[in-house]
Image (tube, rainbow, N blue to C red):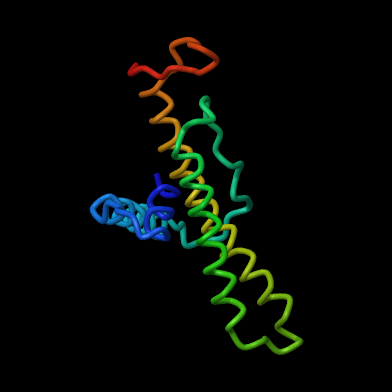
Length: 137
């Protein structure tokens, strides 16, 4: 997992660069899909965050982290923009809010689909020593 890779790197231990590369490639593929899914029109709501049956579903954390990173990047870009004239301030705020909502809506649609797919593949099979075992559907 990411945490063990980072600890290995910080302590001078071995880490698997191929694993890191695969994760970065997956992240870029998801980002391309999110940007391609932007509706290009105002959306009224980003919709709810996706839910999943298993708290151990790694896609839940993946998409939450991606949403946070995208929002931080968008806010950083918006903060660097020249402040609008007072007469145009309300319109600028509405435009910035619409951009954030549009990004979140696209990402959450994709996240709901991906999380649901993984939930279908890995269904709880019962408890063993207090842990849920996952099995292929």
